Length: 93
Image (cartoon, rainbow, N blue to C red; front, side, top):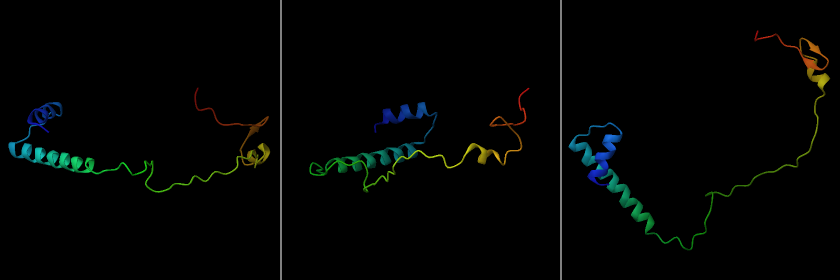
């Protein structure tokens, strides 16, 4: 990170950093850049690409159409029905 980038970030984020804070921020980002450079120097050409670190198994069940309850069974507990429909109080006038 350069001082110019830090200055623009201050303006964008409406910050006013002291010189000590600026040095701290610069040191932090310099350390992160060093970490990234270290990781990029590792040879990963023999490593197989992967989406997840751990193997994931998707359990898929057979899709079977079923009707566990009939309309009449479900409407037994309804306070009022009319020709197979639940009757509810009007909420919008």
